[in-house]
Length: 130
Image (cartoon, rainbow, N blue to C red; front, side, top):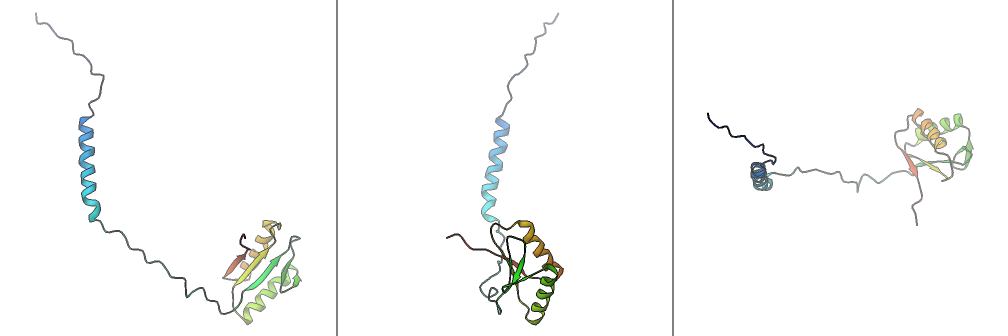
């Protein structure tokens, strides 16, 4: 009778092949990285496009929700009409200014009216921190 020898189970993983593959990949990346050409991005220049021909139309939203143009407090329907007439006479950008205590929803309502009037350039006016 032949004696059979019991095989012992290995309880450790041989990681040497994984380290070899990792080092080969590292060398490949180190050699090929300087050969790749980085993409060139042509960024737009803003020096000339920021010049405006006319001052923007400023719409001020008060804390109560009333909107005013050039010192005149106007209801919403008259505000829409006034914006349309002023932009037809002189096309320009529109700026919405509001007190910091004004509710955000009231400012959004004015901006929605401007969208209804098909105003393309609308900005928000703020005072930078000192």
